[in-house]
Every structure is written in C-alpha cells, then in structure tokens.
Length: 173
Image (cartoon, rainbow, N blue to C red; front, side, top):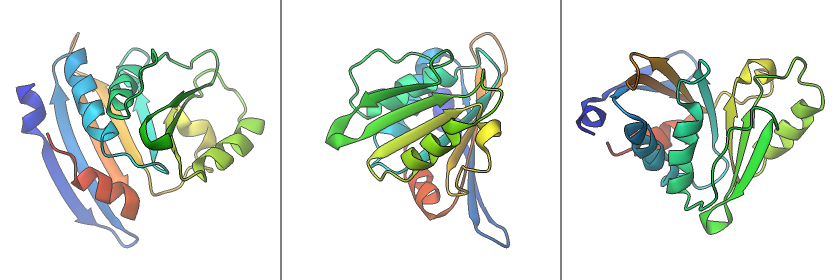
C-alpha cells in the first residue's frame, strides 16, 4: 500500500476549466481495490466515472473497490456480456456499471445512458466509453489503467469540472 502514498497530484488550468490530474502506481489487486474504496466513500450520487484500459487491466477490480466504498454487499461482476449491471448502495445510491466493449453501435443505449447520467442518485461507471463519447458530460472522472507488470498498474486519474474536481481533491491516499 505504500505506493498509493506516492501519488503525484497536479492541478492546472485550461481556457475552459480547471483540470485535476493524479498519477498513482499500485502493485497489487488489493491496492487497486483500496484506491477504488477511497473513491467510493466520497461518492454521493450523480458522479460519472469513465474507465479506460485494456482487457484484464483491472477496471472491474477498481469497480469492486468503489462498491466497497458504497457499502455494496453484492458480488461485483464485469458487465461485458450484459452491458449493464446495477447495484444498490448506501444512502439510496445506485451504482450503474456499463461495459460497451462488445457494442458495435450505441443505438438505444445512448438514450438509457442519458437518463442514468441525469439521475442524481446514481453513480455511473463506464468502461469502453468511446462509442458513447458524445453523451458523456465533460464533468467526469476519467481513470486510465496502464499495465506495468503482472500485478502493477499506473492509474492516471483526471477530472474536468466542478463536481469531479471537488471529489478528486478530497481523495485521501
């Protein structure tokens, strides 16, 4: 867990917004879950998190940690074949976890996603979000997971907007 404490946090301004960026190296699945839990405990509903990474990089592992922070007791599964899984968390927060890896055309999923994103009681996590990029708000957290070794990963966490910047600014490592 010591590598989590070696995060580099940057905040910089662009013409449109202040962007918060953090680089974190994790050395195990447990550390990915711990980081996810630190995010999950801060979520209040209405947040959007986009996960970027290759197959097997740890996206669903991170979601498992976020679920712990939301006090979700259910087993968290990848929605690769179902596109979406929904879980009930603390304080009536709903976790809606999407995986668009197998989706060729967003179609009706665009409408569903727009409704979910607008729900102030729902935390929306999206894997492989490129196909729905035009629906995603700019005020979101983006976490890129880069494989460094068998168990080690570099997490590049960024935000762009008032809600996501505030959330990332409160993460305790």
